[in-house]
Length: 186
Image (cartoon, rainbow, N blue to C red; front, side, top):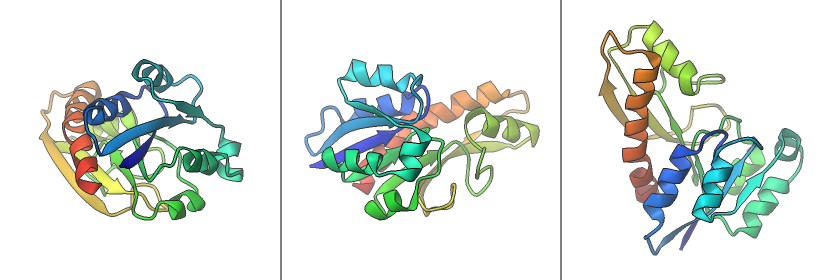
């Protein structure tokens, strides 16, 4: 049995999509959602899905073992970042070597790094008049968006696309591919 923890900082649509995908699987269980944002809608999604959620502060995350202790308590063996905005501390990465995966809303190495998330990415893509965008699913390393790329999917962009249009296209790719790639990695 693979026991997965999903980290999210905001709405949690990808976290919910992943949980629903694995709901009927017998070899995978989403055991908890973790967030750094006490106002994040992902907490409501966790309640609706009857999945435990865990909220932590920056100090907890960076200066203590509270998060790691919780993951141990939940017997987690694989971590998914689904819209989680903080860089993971080294001790967390070491606890799950090659067992932490992230999704990025662009075709890395373009539009990656600190501050490049969500609408920030889509605005940059539109401003640079890109002809395509997409998603990158990658293993997590000590640096933002620099881990080994395991999957990319592309979508064509129109010159009339707004950042919101790009976001819709990207979300469609995320929902379609992220759970399947996680399953393949397991």
